[in-house]
Length: 217
Length: 200
Image: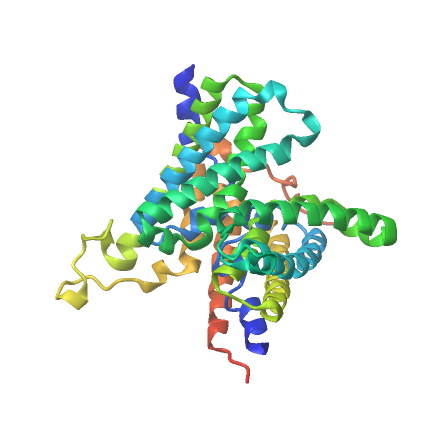
């Protein structure tokens, strides 16, 4: 039971690839694996703690002001994460620019607290939130690995494919490091996921009809 | 100034090169009509919130900003994010009430999209970029307006393409969002080509 809450959001209920939440940062920080990893850890920690705190005080939250209360708690945690990064990993925080702050407006966090933590006790809420954080991380790491490997020939900054500039054979695809490739890779990833799990495909908004041959006079 | 305006619409388009406001961008781009509605709402909110947040940052939050009150060594920079969130949420609420009272037709057209924008990362992101790049008041007004127009332009064009794409014959798994992402990628390539354009 508890394991299911943790494992479901990895593939079948993946927040990024299935529910299409939290796309902004998923696309923006995936130019290299180290930025993607930092962002994933920050988001997972923030969403887990936020779900825990909100779930613990859920019976005391008046219904009318729940969104603003949740936002305040989330924003506080995000500020702490941002300040910690600035204090202990300043270079990384410079590379992530505004995207750590934007965890506060990430739909995954507000989505989990609003949809799950408000109605469930702290332990399952935290497990669920952590599962979603890990699902987000999984997509980020896959996209970042593709982009970094083909864009620069490195993984986590280590040379994997010998680039031509250093006497090797590999010509880096600079496009991989630009914005368009992030969209296209994520689109292809969604296609792959839906080919593997066909029931995740969207319902059609229209019905297909067999074309009847016209009766000839 | 003209250059900043042009750059914030095309080259540094918030949606297509900084990936901001993506959730809304994908969710309400099924029809051109709704896309236009949400685009106009975003222009209005962005055009007001960025200069407003600039004033707040310059006179209350920034390092040494409280010098006018005799508190020169107070730095409230860490409260930036939470204040911006509060300002945007309040602005959206006030705007909705004002519109409902004085322009019911406009409210009917864009009222339902306004609450959506309260936690849209394009808006918060615009304000944060404004702080990071040290824009002055006039620049931040231009930047707010420009990024708003850029985002609205992107979502309208994107919705128009998606409307056409709905009946296209493609693999089952690619239908809907998969194709939407790839279209966004191609549009993003197109917008990055504007980088070569420079106005005098």
